[in-house]
Amino acid sequence: MRPSLDPNRFDMEADQKADAARAWRGHLVIIVVAVAVLTLRFLAFPPTPPPAKAKDVGWKSWDDATAHLGNKQSDKPTLVLFTADWCGACYAFETKVLARPDIAQHLASRYTLLTVDMSRRDSPNQALGKQYKIEVYPTLILYNSSGGEVARCYGLSAPELMLWLKTDGEAIKQYIE
Image 1: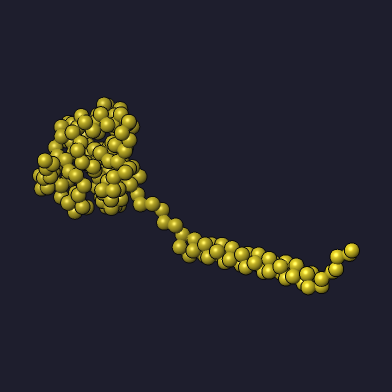
Image 2: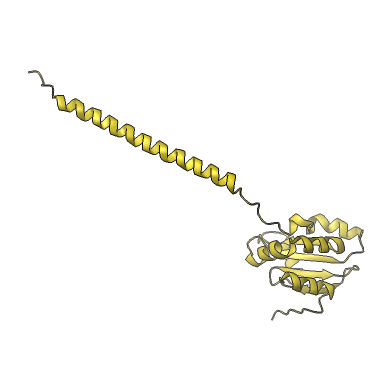
């Protein structure tokens, strides 16, 4: 016996192929639209660079500057910032206060600027944190030109920082208990 040929069977296969082609066209349209939207988004609104941090505006790491301090090539007072990448208050202090162009220029012209990165628990900087009794981040320590500690602060607003610096830490006192 010969199998009978059903004419409707061929129409069903053609319909399935047509449905598959329509589905692919639909997917292709979605992909093209998505690419066009993303392209326009980046052309109209290019990504903004991340905010500047202290290291971007003239601060040197403690390791880079130890030779500089040992040679005492400058009569400037020194500011040392103890900071950590995981610290939200540090990020805010660095990006909103220390990286402001007016503050960055003022600090760079009058102080030797050093940072101590306390981000990693296995870092040798942890010993510096203990040596200088750092309990809060960010901590900013002001040293006079002969190396004696003058004052410390724990993350101030821009006006408070300027007042703190102009009065050598006398105008704003912070205590940790």
